[in-house]
Image 1 (cartoon, one colour):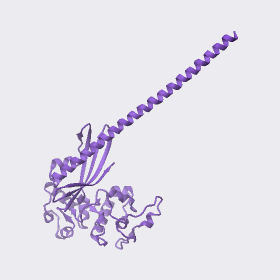
Image 2 (cartoon, one colour):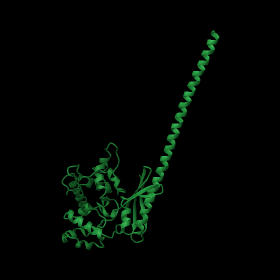
Image 3 (spheres, one colour):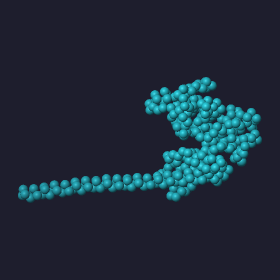
Length: 329
């Protein structure tokens, strides 16, 4: 009897061990299967992300071709709609949308000082007026400080002397490396021209909210003159203290019918006075020596998206289009 009981106990023990091994093997197989499925999904997402990136690159190439063949995309209604960012069109298995803006229609903040290191009072005053316009429309929200103007100047100039703008009553001082080196995450002042507008986020006084307000109106490319055929209403208003919203809108309405062929045609715009014309004729243009474009192309495949941002330069004589900055987001 004892022998039979011992054999039964041994058989029971073996069964338990076998069951445990089967359970452990099942757990291992389940884990392996789960990991394999996750890896397959990750590979599929990577494939779709790469497809979305290719869609975005295709959109950039479309923009380059359009800019190369057309001197002013605003004169071509089909291209204007295609490059507005509002329409999505198919590219392979995905889709793409393209937004093109001409940088010559914005205020170049790299020109707040001239080549000789002297303050460019015309551009400084324009930036101050632009800040006033943006603050006036915020109606109680956070205000953009005048202090960012001397801070930008210190960021782009080559010296280490803190800029003081005496014609600004409050917050007239900029910032050099002494300020930035004492931050929680210290860094040095650039003391050189900005390469991209996003670099403004490193400048004293420019928070993401402030940058969000400014980004559509400032650039780091182009010459000293604003292309009146591309400038936004706020940028047009900032050209002169006497430029009111109604006159700025009249300029925009006029160029929708036919783009300006010369600055002198501004005289024919209803509401334009001789004093306003004289104030803006040397800071506005309709024929920049080089055209700079910012192209944002967004590709999407099955809910996954990728965005490319590029700065293009179009030579007015050779018609060549060069990519001078390219980023993938």
